[in-house]
Length: 496
Ligand SMILES: *Cc1c(COP(=O)(O)O)cnc(C)c1O
Image 1 (cartoon, protein in one colour):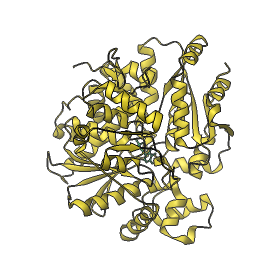
Image 2 (cartoon, rainbow, N blue to C red):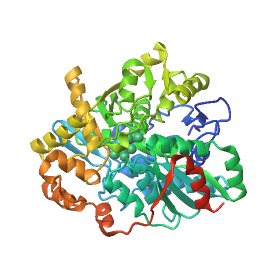
Image 3 (cartoon, rainbow, N blue to C red):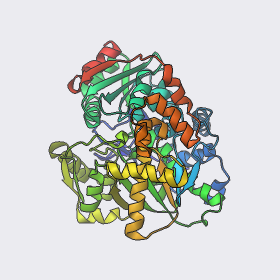
Image 4 (spheres, protein in one colour):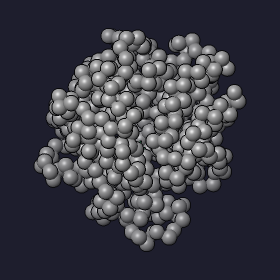
């Protein structure tokens, strides 16, 4: 097999192996790691259609993580995709109102982040062993709600690791917060910050970029890594389910071999949709990548105009995991459409850091033809949940509803009715209040867990274990800090 190395999006030279890229998370120059080329699938779609989720995962991931042995990779996959998922299929698909909802929320924390974060700890500890790392690895994560819990669940009590999660104190759903602050595990820390997700993410990036701190940490036997979707150990496992979804449709004879499908992704940090883009580059017959935003519609404006402008009001919506104005993973796409030119990319990223705005060239914009962007307002999102439930009985969460709305707009605008897979990124149980309010205002006055019971009645879907667990769990994390105190907080936690 051809080895694949990883380059930084911000400088030339010094490509690293997959395991090194996973360990580092972010490149020292502040860039993101990208594979030097995108490998092509080496099994046919028909062959893949006979495989289980785990087998497809192996066929995809082996092409990227080329310095892992077969046994190492198989072990990681076996540990990740097991009974933590409440369905053997791992990522089942539901047809409703003419679209295929790819349910990516059957893992431990009922959001799609589990798809990658149940395997990342294993990829990371394997990478540490391969590279003779002696330091304890400190996972530092900023979360808009779902990553935090999924990372905590994945890393809790994993030997040789500690995990610190920062979340916007007033920017996550009640269930999301409860899930995080009740997290067990002696190596877990959860802190709310007075600020929004972008503040948390910027703070984490600054800590990562702090060379002096890194040297001091090393002296004390620690090193940082990231569980955010900037880590290629997150990105690669996310490619898997697009391949799996396609071959599943093929197996069920819903599509012909080679027939193109469209993919719709509710987008925040641009990780999930970037994985779909990689899947397409690997040869999966995907036509359009439909990028759905909520009222924080930076990406919609970007695809329309070629200007990325984060200078705008940050809107708190009912789809909080998409309340993001700086979509980190977009940098990987920018680098690519700049002809893999780190200097051009760096120039644009510096402009983003300094003025919060950049504009790509017409030549670059012309390469975005695979993408379609649109957004859904709060009202449209809520109406969608209501109407889909009314007409089909199927209940979707707020994030998935944003995607579903945008798909409706796409259909109306273009008439392109190729089979469409909508990434269903969270269980409606995670956003029970917003979902139930959308279905009927009579639920407005009920308590959070009463709503959970009602949702179970009306959707006829069993209450997930993840929700049952937090009903009675005690709060064990209650620390809050200012956004400029994040570094200090980290050092306190580590006792250094
Ligand atoms: C994280 C998340 C998203 C956004 O995914 P990105 O990879 O950040 O674009 C959408 N929906 C839910 C439920 C999420 O948790």
